[in-house]
Amino acid sequence: MAKKVYVVWKGRKTGVFESWEECKGAIEGYTGAQYKGFENRTQAEYAYAHPTKIKSGYNKTKRSVRTSTAQIVWDSLSVDAACSGNPGVMEYQGVHTKSKKTIFHQKYPLGTNNIGEFLAIVHGISYLKKEGVKLPIYTDSRTAMSWVRNKKCKTKLPENAKTKNLFDVVRRAEAWLRENSFDIPILKWDTKGWGEIPADFGRK
Image (cartoon, rainbow, N blue to C red):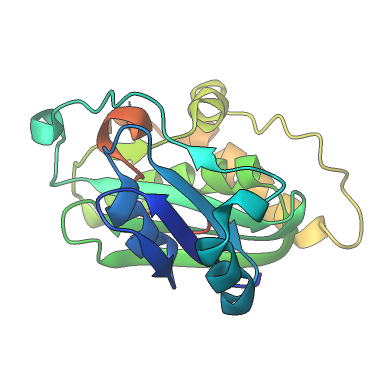
């Protein structure tokens, strides 16, 4: 997936930024921020200099509704997935919430974001149980939380030669959930209030 370049016309900082993290830092919590991602720096620089000529309009932040991060359990595991197209190349990872240190990372040639979110949670649960560590797991996906709760990945992705390996992993994850008990809290990350989950791949 090509790396985007971002323009911020209104925000804490304005200009052209090489990554989503830089862009997010310039707009996060800023009411009325105006920003947009572009395919390359040439397009971005032109857009920054000629904002009125951008036909598709800006992305605009709405009224800030950020909530206190004091309630976050920082000693925890955060998981997330990303997909280049949906379906497309899919990967997921788990990181320590406070340090953002990568705990695990997996990548598959074809999948969906929801499958990745589901597998990330199950991977996190099994990892923590194996290590004998009881930490909560944060996810920003209510769908994946529901699938884990029901011990069933309810994806509509077709199973074929290209997805067979992925479905083998999904079935192992479902079997693991059925055969193992755990008391690890699965918590919903408040993206609107806290910003992107620490495991985010930064591809917005």
